[in-house]
Length: 64
Image (tube, rainbow, N blue to C red):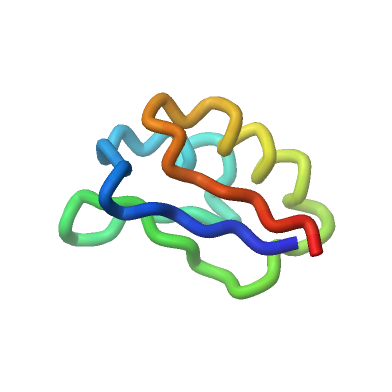
């Protein structure tokens, strides 16, 4: 599983980092970044939750 962020949509609210800090972090520019290439299996549920809770729908989950 992979996650990507559309930086043009990210509002910088940091919900993703709060929900799944194993995968997401806020960059110095105030835009969320993905920290890992492949989401660790133990973080997959939290990663999906972060995508679901993103108010700007900037996170895409790639299951394969």
